[in-house]
Image (cartoon, rainbow, N blue to C red; front, side, top):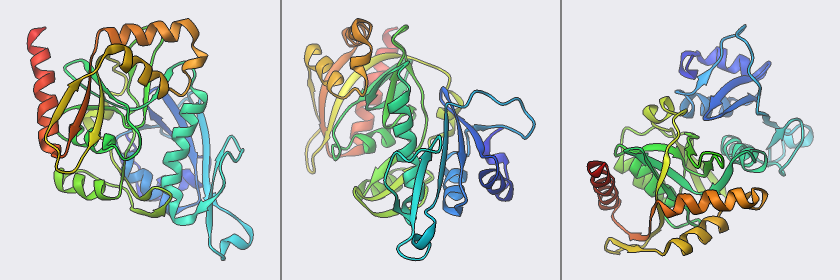
Length: 310
């Protein structure tokens, strides 16, 4: 059953009671909250994800989380929200209006800190024609903007933040959760893809203003389909820049992936071999851009040309 099938009252009752069971990619989550803002964000951003009816067999729950208001004087004086994982508090509280964004950041932390069956890289990942493009880049590079642009032009979203690689098969697994956009990128994507759905604006965070874009329904519907690495692209937005793709040596690309990996050190020789094999079969480049439509058209033509050669 899709989460969208739950009416707002039932969604709120589940969150306030035993928790909402939700599947995203290979993970089952149990999310609980007394906050209307969290319920609203889930209804908007996770509408296409699978949930469970009451009385259905309960799957193993990978992550059990709660986002609630801090009690005591903080209920009235500068109210705050707290993220809990298995009843532990891994982060300091944040301002109450940041609760829904805190949920997304907390879930990223859950996956990156505990899902060591995968090699986890801080990168976006999108797929077309059976090949995945991985986009590792530092904050402010335009990585999430390019990711959001591509998935609104026919690419499948695997992930905006956490690229999951199965070290046994070398394939990349989908984790089609909301795409995090910041500051001017929010308006850029709203103009670029007017049909895209967004959660609430979260202002005055350490990252500025943040909003999350709902993953396309087609991406969520294919969230059990893994795929092979096809490209490693290091994007960089530069205002006024012409489109500038430059080949990148595979050895340099490999080391950059290692630098962006959360848990490469835990996988030893198998992790090294997995990344080496993936990069050896991929095209690697640095990519400067300023025009999002041009950038998306470039990569779509690149992917379609590859597909035509198969």
